[in-house]
Image 1 (cartoon, rainbow, N blue to C red):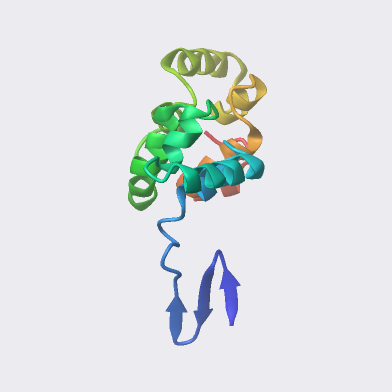
Image 2 (spheres, rainbow, N blue to C red; image 1 turned 45 degrees about the vertical axis):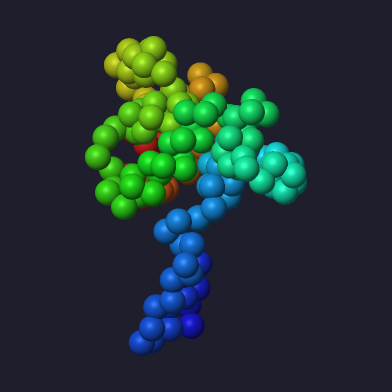
Length: 152
């Protein structure tokens, strides 16, 4: 039996856990390096007390994430994964509220001058962490991420 990415492959069956394509929001945000494990645990404790609040709302209310970022991962991320890459990485980062149009324009201008990949510039400018960039690349641009750590 071979285990890869939480999928168990055992001839003649493939077992995919129920939440494989729809992981919990907190886990996605943590894996994307947008929150820490401690922040996730704090919000889960808060959720027990404030049952009417959604986890994403609690992250936003605590000021740890923009509501726009939470909404993207709660509502759009699954569709993005199913559709595969439809846009340049900057567009996904903008939709997630991690970059704005001005950031993208500055990165593209710099990219023209120095011929460095978009993601590498975003990380070097402190706009994203390397782990966040890798999360997007590995999930949306998996073939591209195999070619280079600083794709797009």
